[in-house]
Length: 463
Image (cartoon, rainbow, N blue to C red):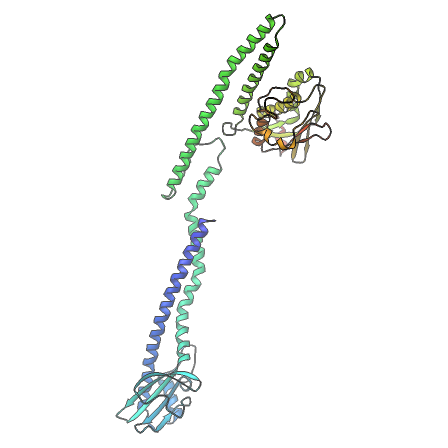
């Protein structure tokens, strides 16, 4: 069903048209029956009047008398008695003593009292035969059936046409009335649609109709269950990550002390240290992912200089880059976007860390930030192995790593870095694309943000 409003309107109009048609058809038949009765009575009056006219009266005089006394006018049809009424008068011997212009010279009907339908003079006629024993004469009066039907239909149509013309008006009224009646559904939809993603409180509407109450209650029950589920997930992720921080920190301290005490640290202990560091990194990534989840995080965007923010993140990550003797370039200029500073720092940090970890020693890494019109682009390129085209969408899945835990680079990871990047990109309504770097040969990550719209927003820029 495309539209309840359209369905109800068309259904009601169809019912009105059907009922109007059936009632009009019945009314037409009854009106025609009554009209025929009235015309027969009128024809009987004509015949009686003719039976009283003296045979000495000429034809034109009889027609004029009928026209003045019985048939002054027939609505919009101004017909003379000669064209509307045909008559014949016979004596008891069957001799024609008087007839109208439209009447034939032979009897229009057999000399039998009563009504009958006959054809003559090119028309179908309703004929009445009466006998006047006092005057010893037979009188035949006939009336054209086509004129009868035309007169009757003109009267009936005058009553039916207003009903037909009222149907479009009824359709317009029904359309607006049904729309008014369905307004609470639109109000409920607007109340749900206009909410923030983190607002799962109950929907409250005034004067909710009884038909909409079950839907409102079901919606509120769903929101309540979603809120409860999100709260459980949030508490579990946050508690688990925070509880893991302490033992991991203790393990780091213990393994560091053990390595210091040993004159020649074994390869097993070094592997254990790397595993503990990877576990700590995983816990931190889970915390970042949980803090930036749209259903848990109320986003309050502020104007941010993306170029300056990238400078700060690079300075904090630069020591790890130097250890691998990698060359890092930051190109571009100030570019203002609206966003959350904490989330964007995590995005830049993950992009730089991925480019550095999965590129070999002495590799080149380049970040370019530029504004073109209403868009701000961030490109991160490296000279590493890159990602095959068939896997570029899957690397955004949580805990997915190319080649699994046995990555060709030998670098441990959690599989959450690019998932967090994609999450933050979606939170800022930006676009991200992975491709091959044309200049460096490795992976190219391109992110497109919306630029801040007004100059006033540049005041109080956060980095």
